[in-house]
Image (cartoon, rainbow, N blue to C red; front, side, top):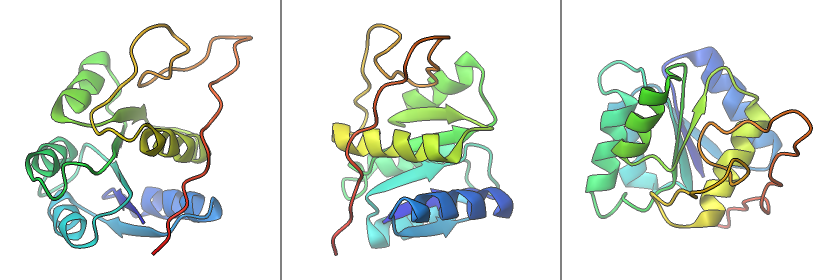
Length: 156
């Protein structure tokens, strides 16, 4: 189960459809408070979290998830229009596993979430050169993007 957290219904619908088309079960929440409650109850395989939301913003949500033993291991990808280097650093410092700037290709976001889940360790981010999949990385002209890992399949 993938939990998508965004206060914009159009984005939530688009992302939900994209993940479902790739074979994922999806639940949604429209703010951080609702998402925190859902995450504690359903323990999703991964979360996609918007940063700018009412009630509780995405960074506070990520911090609270990471501070609770029951939710600390959930892979989290922030997806936000806040895309300056400082915004990305703040998301990663809060505990997100990756950060994708909006607007983004929804299927690229699905692939990013699948890679984060495949890595397995929350908070683990590759380091090194430009082709190692660091947050926000976009391949330069003529360079192939990293191949996505195997598709995540949820068995309940």
